[in-house]
Length: 169
Image 1: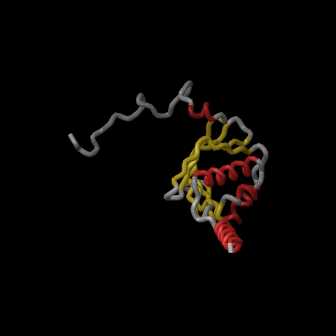
Image 2: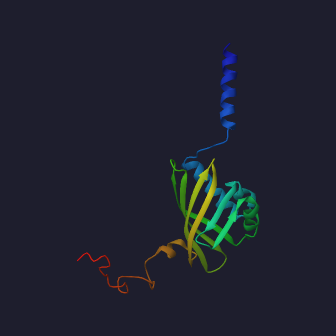
């Protein structure tokens, strides 16, 4: 009898582990994102695609890039060379909404790189919607975020004089 109970428990655990994952936690999110970074950085399209839902949307709003599904992502990822590198500096994840974000640098063998943020929505344990926003700058992240030795486009010295546009005075 004890053997049957043990077998039933093992079968139950096996069925639970084979069930499609519907929610992920931070560790699962980190693994998904690291698979993307490693896949892009090592030209392993299959690894990168393994983190994306088969119908995922990858975009750079408002109208810079748009790819839908593995069919369109595969050729996009296949074009990456050994000069392309993706590094995530920070990852954030909200379990309840199954939404995460990352701060990244994507370099491509030049003196500049794209550094930015991606917002990632998950569905059934995979990336369903990737939106990225980035700006070109130095390859080194610490240089990118440094406040030293830069000429700023906007600062208080050139900011327009405030006006009472709501007539509150």
